[in-house]
Image 1 (tube, rainbow, N blue to C red):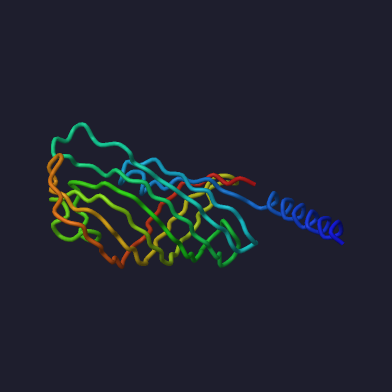
Image 2: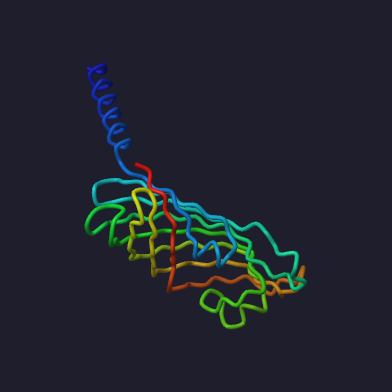
Length: 195
């Protein structure tokens, strides 16, 4: 009985490998995020069914500009995952998504009123955030292998951070939590399709 069960499991496993190898996949970079934050980023998207995909992505910026004496920085890492349902077929046309994200950051000298308030440019924020939301996007085919994609998402994020005076090595002014509702995703991505 045990051998029969193992053989059945091996056939199921082999069938899932064959099915996965026949699925399309894509590698992409979010040009909007990369240019705005000067951050390298990469995403991979895999077909789950004829009308659904999953996207996994990440970006980071570990660099502080040497030009700024005011300690201006946008040091962070960001990870995300999104399930997508395509209205026609995967990697073509309109899609709806559900995404989650997580980040750790050290931000100073940037005016980010939606995240940290109106006086955000005067402080440094060091902490983490998690969240999620829904998104809508459109995939534009350019050729057999190359595409562009526009994507926007709205949702919730929970931010936890220590707040410091913006000067280099400024003193800590407190620890805060913030509930954020608003845009959680914005992308204009260049895509290479893998068949």
